[in-house]
Image (cartoon, rainbow, N blue to C red; front, top):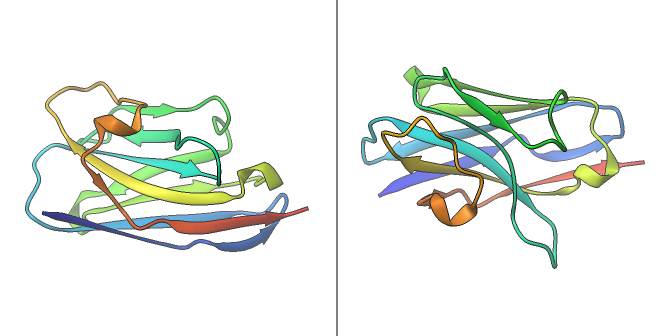
Length: 126
């Protein structure tokens, strides 16, 4: 099994920044693709961004492109989400996720990812 633990959520004013971290542990996974989703009550889980195992390929949702940046540190088995210029509509629970695949494609549907963190709350006040 793979465990994912997110950290870094919290309360921030509109226009501010936060950096989320997600540390992976447990079973050794080769070539993991990792990503971030978010969810608000009553809505489907929304894809935000993903990064392939080497870091050479990333994918961003239009809603966060230019404001959010994903990165990873393979030595620490950790992926990061730098969020800038936050807006009240970014308020949600943010989830880290991981899949194992030889493909360079970064999927955007939740059911294509096998492992999930417990989520961390991000609240942006206006």
